[in-house]
Image 1 (cartoon, helix red, strand yellow):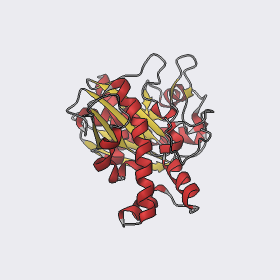
Image 2: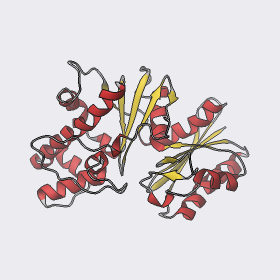
Image 3: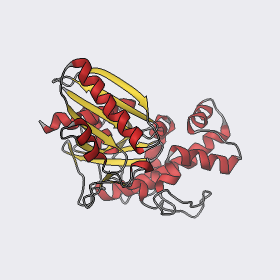
Length: 299
């Protein structure tokens, strides 16, 4: 059997699959905003599932950031309490076995490329737009990590600017200014709406208002889509995937899928843009399913 853990900034989700990949049980707990609490929660979920089903399982973990090849510690995670900590090693010590640890966006992308919304394509780029903005590259159903273990981190490129920009550059937690993440993430989405209309609303409420015909919200979403197209055009220009699969809370914005391709044509270096920009198939389950798939692929 295979256990997957999706370590999110606010929620930690676990899943256990049988030998055929069928979901047996899924659990979710709040993620403590500190390292030791996060470690306790993660290992507690694994122990609970193994005790319940009386089976020692392969464990795959999806986490924000990535393992540094130099230090074996987490780097670049927007759950900043994990950065600089030997998460993989500490989990292995607690569970007394080897585990498989991957970036959470890689797990999402693997799940969607394997049997999800991107399954018919050889090159799939998975995008999570939520608390942060991450990405994962899958070629022929395999995760591409890259030489520095940062493949897919498009959220920390700078946003390309046009002549009529209304949104200002601002600081990113990574120490740089103007990162794509600060424009496209859920918090960035809300911040820019507040700056524009002097009303503080979360991304979900703005989307709901737009769907109900609120003109201010709808106009703002179409401005957002232009920034999304600028960011995704960089991905297409470099790796030219067959599909870009979107996940995270912002991916529920229905206006994306009807309107993004004409906007992409403004920025992509091609006379045609046939890359499919699609919503994920498995919703919030994609990340944790991908984490469990790490174990299935290792056998």
